[in-house]
View 1: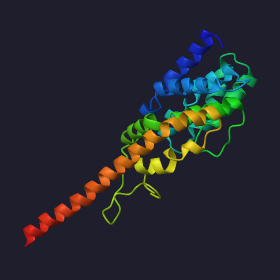
View 2: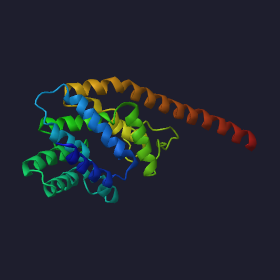
View 3: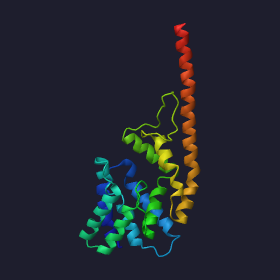
View 4: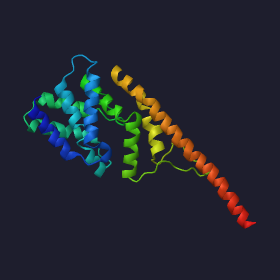
Length: 229
């Protein structure tokens, strides 16, 4: 891949970015993560890897407009069409398509090629640690979802088993579990270095709001009881 081909893909990617949690900088971080992971692997097709990283979220805007759309599935198809239209070989476009269509955490479609596994790990690495928490909070705010939910008994839910979305629910459903989903050794190691930061933040935030509700409700009851008596 030469500079002209890279810029062509990059310009197309930039034209598709609308989501603040999946913006252009997310794409570059995934690309840089992938290049770091690839250094520990053999026989990496860097052309396929770079193209897949650049184009993996081009259908995010479509999924945001219609949640029934899977951005990975549609993104792979759009990337294939774009690459073929711009003179890339069909075999190359198919490899990129596979990488993109298997990069999603919530999709039961296993990455098979080495490049697909690296993309998967690089994308999940951007959901790990402090950056993963920051991106999740930004997205939750963007779609007007809360940080936490309050249970019928007045206590703050830790997110486990919640049916309604929140930051705590996303942490328990996905963020705390991604560390066991990596395919490459380097990806696992890089994610492991970030794990404690995410765990401490979640536990500290849960502790703060839980104590606030417990103490605040007790204080409120005393104030209201005093006024009633």
